[in-house]
Length: 109
Image (cartoon, rainbow, N blue to C red; front, side, top):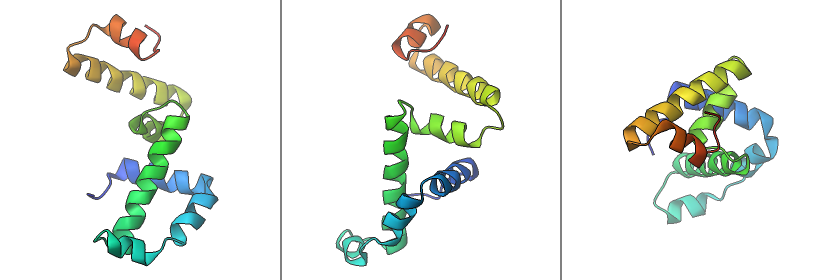
């Protein structure tokens, strides 16, 4: 797993501050489980953190990148504007009509 971007790392740091039980779970990982996977404990821990972050995003019906924006945006308005811009880029890359894309992802047109 590659090093996280600064924004993603800030989101992870916020996520961990808000979820001390996940910190406790990560701190109690078995080093033998990491070794069995051919990973260092740090690599194994990073992967478990990523999985917990993804699961939390899914529970909130968000993509992980949306949760990253939500945890790092300066305001709710900034989050919504950034989120909308990324969704527009995704729709364009997918070659989808914006209205169709919005309906597919429950976004306001």
